[in-house]
Amino acid sequence: MLNEQSSHSEVAVFALRALEQSSQPMNVTELAKAIPKSALTAKKNLPELLRPLVEAGQVRSHKARPAVYWLPGLEEKASARILEALSDVALTQTELKKKLRSSLSGWPQPKRDEMLALLIKEKRVYKVAPLTGKAKLLSARAELAPQDYIKLALQLAAAKLKPLGFAAEQVFAAAYDLLRQGQSADKTSAQPLNGRIAQTILERMIQLKLAAANGALVSLCELRRSLAAEVPGKGAFDQAVLRLAEQGRVTLRHHDYPSGLSQEEREALVLDEHGNYYIGAALRV
Image (cartoon, rainbow, N blue to C red; front, side, top):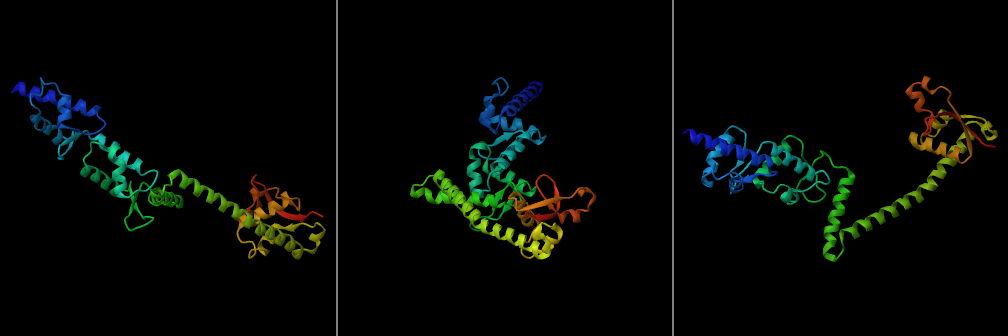
């Protein structure tokens, strides 16, 4: 009886050592190879010898065919690989299973499904709206950003065009060229608008104060209020005024002590990228 207990203990030591060194679950055949024959007389006896370790929680197992064993800490590493697979782009469950075949080799599919279900329950993986179809996507983020859906759209386009002989690199390059063309068109169309805003500001300065035509200072707070309908938004007004100053069409007077103003009062002034606040503008004559 003492020899039998000693043999059981020796098997446990070698089994635990083998599992500690393994990066994936091990089946009975793999574990048996790591245990000296002097301790394990027959491979068929190994599941029974491992049962006390499983019951004590030192070793986890799954009744797959063949049965596999692993240490508890290995599950968290496997979960990390699932999260890593979803960190770059959202995937369907089928796509995720395909991606995990190599990184989670050795894990039975039912156990992979259990780990994924637990990650979803713990809100570490989320089900998000798909680009097409009804099946939800799996993501490491609760909500997808526009760029995530654009990436999915490009991948879908690449998959659709592949049978026609177009490589993914060609599809991505074409999309990039179209984006650059669109940006150029936006800049071209924005230039007349900026010009109109600038001209409106110059004309309104004279309308508010006739002396502005001779270089009198006009309050930027008053000018902003007057143009609220024509130039909505603080950013557009500020940029237009600063642009006029850069072009030498107006001079700006800065506030000497903006820290003494309330936040609301500072918001009414024009702020440049260097942190300077301006209270007035005068036409260069």
